[in-house]
Length: 146
Image (cartoon, rainbow, N blue to C red; front, top):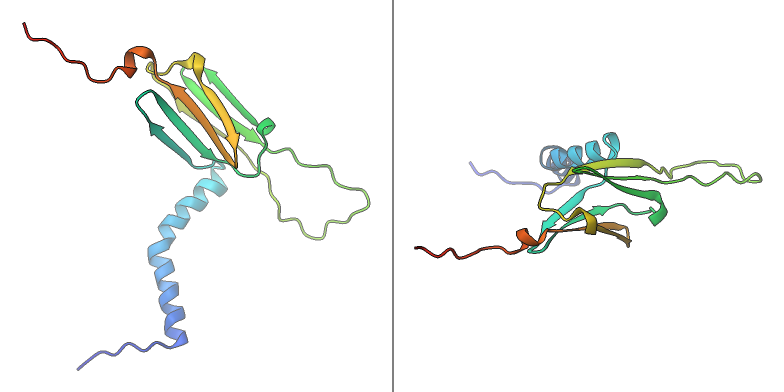
């Protein structure tokens, strides 16, 4: 006996639903949990020879909305979008814009030159450059055998 797959609209819909349910659900669940419940944007951390770079996706914010603070070894990045005042003569029928705040902390080690950390917000991405101290930048060192 040979099995024949039928490409009917019902099967495509069912297959699409099953695909979404079993393949995409864990990915989407984690993303929605992170963004909706925990309220913090995703971050990329890149290590280069002379610095670390942290990039956070935070579209729709302004530079003034961010607060970056270093307290000892804890680097805290927070943001809060200020809401605009309502216009007197307008009646809001439906409001779907939601501005959230977030707070995210990173623990820095002794390799970071804390005095020279810089931050820049451009095109919805907050970039922080954390330079390494001079003694850490050197990399590999040859040791002579006596």
